[in-house]
Length: 494
Ligand SMILES: Cc1cc2nc3c(=O)[nH]c(=O)nc-3n(C[C@H](O)[C@H](O)[C@H](O)COP(=O)(O)OP(=O)(O)OC[C@H]3O[C@@H](n4cnc5c(N)ncnc54)[C@H](O)[C@@H]3O)c2cc1C
Ligand code: FES
Ligand code: FES
Image 1 (cartoon, protein in one colour):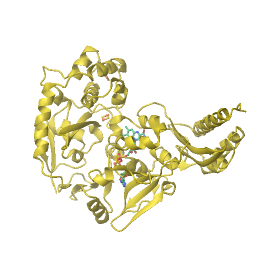
Image 2 (image 1 turned 180 degrees about the vertical axis):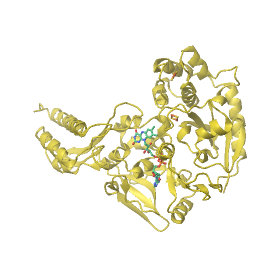
Image 3 (image 1 turned 120 degrees about the vertical axis):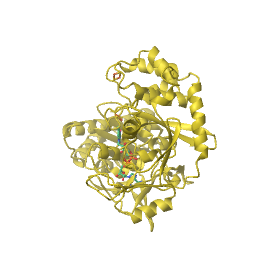
Image 4 (image 1 turned 90 degrees about the vertical axis):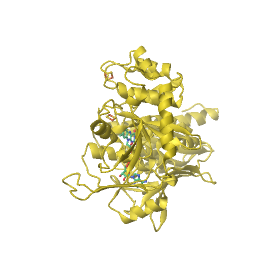
């Protein structure tokens, strides 16, 4: 087991000990290494000014896979055994430009320049992935620019994506590969500082424990129930940076292969490991809900989806999380494991109150089970938020039902943003179950909805707005099914 952090940065292997494990990658780069090309804007994952690439070596293909991440909410120990690529690495010194930088110059993609290194890194990720030019908006959805406007930047992205690999960057990649090959097998990380790092925990030391087996993860959870589990840090990073909370003992779930696996069981159940990110899960989850593409695209940004786990979204139990309503409508179950037992609960009973769950202190959420969908099920997931990308929902509405012989069956409608927890609309579901598909049921369903929820007023939306939007979305979804069945039966909708 490694007790120091090892990563590759600025053309050299790095070994770190003694630094606070909750130091962010951004603060390390800027304050400890003077790599100030990486900027600090919001410090909460929203603006992309701090974008860097994390390179991960795939030994079978002998390639490095890159992902753009927000350094401001990435903890330094999370880059253990990665290549941290900063904007300083892209070109071959101050007098040369990488193809994405040249394209930014040619298309006038920069004015004040504050956002530019972040955009350049996102465009570099797109270039290295060999993405299609029309993927440009996806790659930069996590970057904000306050003065240039996005048109020239999108043009630069489209222009540079097909450019040949930069020879200077390829040479740096080869030296990074040599470093990856020199690493001994990964047996886990137990990184501990002895020095006092704040008045609050003076003398106590701080721990970042990242086991590589499920057994070791559950053992650590059992031995240190006060430790905080951490996955993508897209929630925890904000508690650290904005709420100034201390996390003296962290256990990371993300290095355990079973936790990041996403597989179909023989009966068609999809099992998403408790530490699988949204991007890791989507290729198989999309097979279950192809209608969910817009929901997936609108979850934060690609930067965040590459870090954020579905398990973290569920355990966080936020009333405005976008994953839980979808999982509720899909009748998902959560698998929770401890050293002594494993149990599975329907997600509908997992949320016990505002940000409260049924997870016990010695348990880890190890999987999310999604049963196969019945054929001919209607499914739609609609997010209502002020901005299209990188915004939190005011209301999240998910509709799932099956129509057989003109009657509604298996009705599972769920909402986020309407109550203290993500919830099934149980009154609406009961009001529709077994009823004939006709416009007559719309009014009673909308009335049932107003009895199911008493939404709150807050900065995202008023209670009136939330209820009105939810009722309108319900009516739209019902009319879609009613129109489809009446036109299939050759009838004119009433
Ligand atoms: C810029 C930005 C945009 C965002 N946009 C959205 C959005 O559009 N929709 C949305 O729903 N959310 C959004 N979020 C919130 C966040 O990305 C999600 O909630 C995410 O899924 C959390 O996962 P994580 O792995 O980062 O959790 P972490 O921050 O690592 O952990 C969150 C909590 O879950 C616990 N936890 C994590 N994994 C486990 C486990 N396996 N077992 C037990 N406990 C566990 C941790 O202890 C912690 O309490 C956004 C966040 C940011 C910063
Ligand atoms: S500083 Fe804004 S995303 Fe990191
Ligand atoms: S160039 Fe000024 S913020 Fe983008």
